[in-house]
Image 1 (cartoon, each protein chain N blue to C red):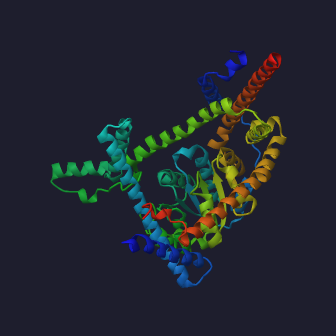
Image 2 (image 1 turned 60 degrees about the vertical axis):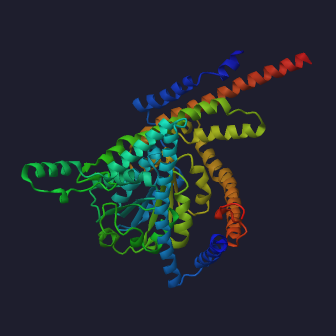
Image 3 (image 1 turned 180 degrees about the horizontal axis):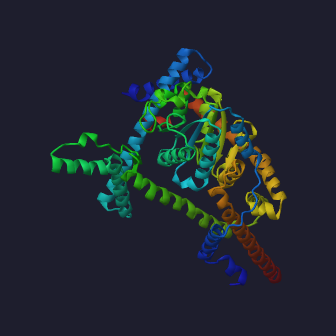
Length: 242
Length: 281
């Protein structure tokens, strides 16, 4: 059992890690074919991850509702919204569906075979499906509203906390004010040079610091990858100590 | 409590009201200040301008409805430009919640420009995997997307004639609202499959992408609503982004004013505290 739980995953990681690190530098057709196959596997695994995520979400919120934990009402709303959206996403074209029912009742002729199903589409045959209605008139405005509210909270937070408590904070404050001015037409109209200063701050100061952070993060990622490939870092195996 | 202290603890609803008014009034009564085009937006425009008719342009709409106000106008402007130039347009998304919106914007602009699905453009939809979708498209586009969003077999579409993988795409632009976006397209796509890459993003992530711009890893960057407005000015088709710039100007200045006021009150309090301590000692 230890072999299956420990050695085998480590061996697979070692072989796969070295193989695909090398693959990048080998443009041979068989190497490319291997990458094509594996990238398809990754896409399929990605699909399963989605199923796993949805299942896990259902499970967590079902437990909350069953135990009537604090805030279980929100879990119920989430459940209702998810189930409702799934049903809507799999529903038929209602117009065709009702026509088929009428045909069946009045003419005793089954036209259900011709009914098109939404299958996650927002529009079929030129008209909006129930799923499309939920997407366009609920999800899009709700997400947009949530994001728009941020502007109000940012303004309030900036007023309360953006203070020049030290020299460094003062530098940050001045830079922020210049960039905020330089990114809008009114700022460039009032102080024409603010646009150019903003460009310089973004292209020189910001880019150089960001690059330093990126290089640091990338070196860390390379080191971590090597540790995982060679079995030094084993946290991904889970299960704690043997 | 002194006046400065009272002002520092002002009811936040007053700030909300101020921001609300600064957004609403300019939308109702636009001023229409001139918009200066930045070099990073101009380079995206210039590159599309330089592409010959029939070139393959891939627009990846990697955002969800939360980022619609900033990225949707960018998509509209880019699609208008690409269709006007008679490029073959491939639309897709790496963000599942954005699929419907992406499909809608591509088909809507195509309709406005008199383009036909399958012949002039295709919307591939979404496929799970993020970076691995890009690798798969780089290896074989038809294996990554055997059918388009309307379930038409991609191999039979005239718009994809001569396109086998990402190597055959002339220009890719990712409109990104987060981590699966421009950087992903660079790391898993451009670096290996050697197509030209440009980017569009929300204002909040734009500063993080400047290193890619400066090193030439992306050839241009459209940042936030301002970037969209600049692009609308470039193509001569003013839309929602230009309309929103007055509101953005007003809110930016309201926040600047609030920050300055808060610091004035803060310094007043600090000075009076220092004086009181000196008097005591």
